[in-house]
Amino acid sequence: MMKNPFSILAIISFLTYSATWAQNPTNTGSEKIIFQEKVNFENWPNCVKLSNGNIELIVTTDIGPRIIRFGFVNGPNIMYVSPTDKGKTGGNDWRLYGGQRFWHGPEAAPRSYSPDNSKIKYAWNGTTLKLVQDVEPTTGIVKEMEITLSATANEVTVLHRMINKNLWAVELAPWAIASCAAGGHVIVPQEPYIDSSQYFLPARPIVIWYEGLMADPRIIWGNKYIQVKHDSVHTGSQKIGLLNKQRWGAYWNNNNLFIKKFSFDPNAQYTDYGCNNEVYVNGDFIELETLGPFVKIAPQDKTEHTEHWLLSRLGETINEDEITIEKVLTPIVKTFLETGK
Image (cartoon, rainbow, N blue to C red; front, side, top):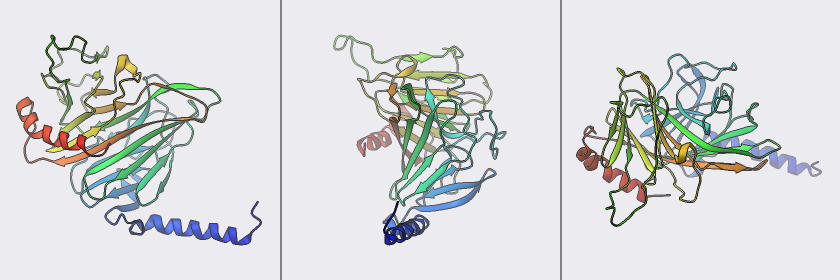
């Protein structure tokens, strides 16, 4: 109990200042970050928008946590939005919705499909937007996202956190999934060529799901890259996974290039026969997915998985030719990998 009345006044003053600070991010030194509340996007009236004047993100708060839009200001949305789910809230059925979502791995029902249909809490400190979901009643897990948009570059850091609120330990892998808009293709790197006389061990696992076909024309097994194309003619589901030691994957669409940078720990255990990078495609959208290590989380403990995003507007098309990919994509990826974490 507070015995000093001035302490109560100080708390009230601090809360008032914090609210003002949240509404006026110029107070933080992040002059270029625009924070906007009560944005109506696809019939969700309480979205939050972050923008640095060049790129923007829109985050739902009526459901989530979800990043439902990512793109250049006045440009197309990199993310897919489900036409049958947009604007919906509530209920006990899991909905796709679209955008960037946060799951438990390995995939299992009902655990992975715990609905995110309810309002979430959020806080903005002028630099980072924190999203907090209530405890999932079926899993005892709290999901959080922390989104930090660069004021000076077309880059975003998305930290995914799972907190175990159970009285027992749980085992899982944090799983970040971006449902991307139709029409483009995912590009993930192959391991560099090494002559067998110099190195005898295998390079990495490539995993195919039961629903997948090796001869699927949407998959291009290149020498330097694996590409997965969205094709509205082929509506069947396809999924592949790999242990991506190169730490990046990209999605090209509408001359926009979306790159995810993520971690690889050679000492960690990964799910799905050792995958930290997966790609799913059907007739409506394509997903670029990354996973953190499979870990045991003690009660009240947490695990985290971070992605770093880059969005580039290209002046030329990235087609299926690996020569073009090398020319256009490689310099961008090399620079991105060398900056930050």
